[in-house]
Amino acid sequence: MTFNISMHRSWWMENGPGCMVTSVTPAPEWAPEDHRYITISECVLEYQYIEVAHSSLQIFFALAGFIYACYVLKCISEEEDSFDFIGGFDSYGYQGPQKTSHLQLQPMYMTPLYF
Image (cartoon, rainbow, N blue to C red):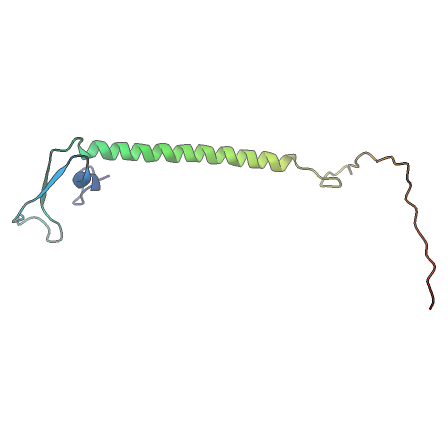
């Protein structure tokens, strides 16, 4: 956004909807050599209004993206906090319920085979 406070021109000034750009020759003596001197007419909207609308839209998208990023971060952090595995970081030594089974596992002893 320039708001006519610098020598630089807004892109919207020359490329706005319906704008007709006409080059003025010869350029006035006070005009810098690396700039072209133009007149603009028949614009549907003044470029300042388009610049403000464009900037407002960018601010809206940035704010919506920030809010969405905070929401995603909150969801991820809640998911991580809810995870707990058996024998985890609990200081009181949580032990899950023991499975009861009719089949008891016993150690198995084998005698070595000699050939």
